[in-house]
Image 1 (spheres, rainbow, N blue to C red):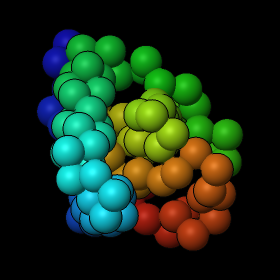
Image 2 (cartoon, rainbow, N blue to C red; image 1 turned 30 degrees about the vertical axis):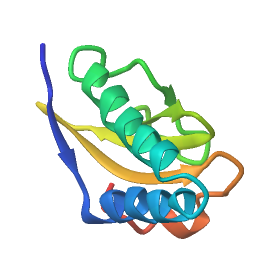
Image 3 (cartoon, one colour; image 1 turned 180 degrees about the vertical axis):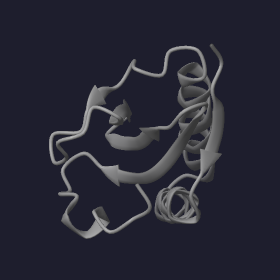
Length: 101
């Protein structure tokens, strides 16, 4: 079953911030990283449970996949996947727990 992909405003802002930061050193690499976020997201349409359960949450519907050193965090709903955050792998999610999950 193919899921519909949805992006929260916050997740898109996260990607924009990451791109802006990387762009300072390499605009080409920034574009590559952003593209990879969306490529990985597309895979989840068919394989929604590919990612692991997010350790900070006690919910099997909130999962993450890694894109380079970033955590692409998403929630599986009935027929859609909602991307809620993109954070560096070394950051804690304490600030992101209030996001739309």
